[in-house]
Length: 564
Length: 51
Image 1: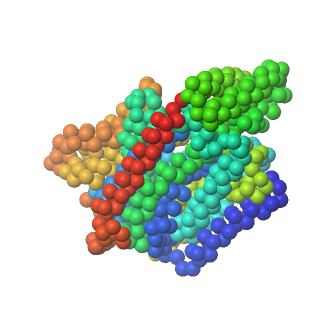
Image 2: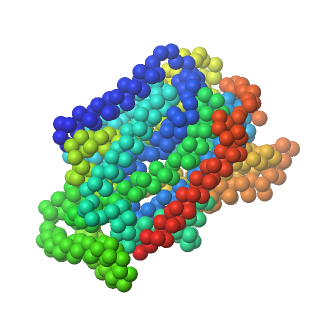
């Protein structure tokens, strides 16, 4: 990075943090600290919800995912607008009327304290781990590519987030997220514009999309059905709906965002704002990945994007094999580039037969190039074990940023990635601190302390969870495929948690015992499915939820026995 | 039922009219319409730029 990049990076991050601190200075009571004083308007709530969900890995991974696998990942979000409507219509009024700080307080009001502790405990475990990963995931990639120390990167990101989250509470989190989303969207639009600008002059947006489409990257919607297929229309609209219901309706890191609304109207509008803009935002990020893919049809990409791992392979006894693969790759790239140009020229000439011929030739040359990349990947994984800790796709966009984009923009886009890391982590720490204080500390240890005492306790527990997240981020590198493991872990529990909440919201005649037993059976079933089948993980959300709802109805006699 | 001494006091149910379109039902239909338009666009992109 140049001096200009460092200036842009430091100035952007410093502005956001100082702005957040300045906007939230002054007296704090428990309502101000944990619910932002119920002062926030819908644009801030909406941006805060989006920023919480969009972690750094979203901006590092998603363009790379489109590069490798096409745009089909967008289908995961198809159920999200439907979930936003259901939450806005039915769940927000309940939370608002009951005047709760956390979603789990509601479980005690509806069932008993046992269900409250169960919900809060599952949240703390799951989100506590996730907060560590939210810091670790971008750190390992940035540290590797930029030559930074992994531990120092972790500590810098973690410390900044802890400082402003602790000092200003929920309001500081939301105010900084508003600025972070502005930086994120500005950075992504500039990146998209610069990629288009760097394409060959005879390649229009339509040509670029055709080239990507010919190689299967424009697979936005797939109406085919398959339980093992991770992303299709049906898993997205059904599984994605239940995932979004669970995440936005019951996960405190999101619930806290809209509980800080000035009124029920502001909270609802914030959620619906997310419902309308989330899919277009993901589309833009994925399409940027597709444009990077097209860019590298005309500019030779590295044979393996995780270049530190590639360099490590060159120092092993298999360097010769790599040199041979590289030689064949260079020749295959030139052939593919010529085939891509021929396809574009045929398209411009409008000759249907020639278009089909050149398209087939382009597809075959791309297949050959991909086979060489795959051989290289396997060679690296066999000889450089640390390369397996992160997916190659995660390195594609950051490689493009630091090697292709101009000075200044690199700093801005690194600020985008760090902003995303900090915005998600801030919400997580804020929610973890709140849940620990409200659902455990105030409920069982100090029920009648002063407001000032709870504000201090909230700050202490936020620091505690920040330190836990940092410690977890520091040791995360000891475990292979940790990021994927934590993502799947989330889906394993979300269905059951959502089932508990849906029974609580909509099945008023079902009591504690039936719901508790149904939740245990559902969780056991999901764990069995996870260990014994290849089912796509989005379906766990639907199945877990359905089992809790159906079984709790069937097990209602348990409640009658308890009452007798 | 709860015996939670820290249990919050319920807030009154307030009139909750949206600032635009007159009713929440219309706003929900707007969100669904935006989703439908996006689905149509994405289906067309998938079909038109299929391999």
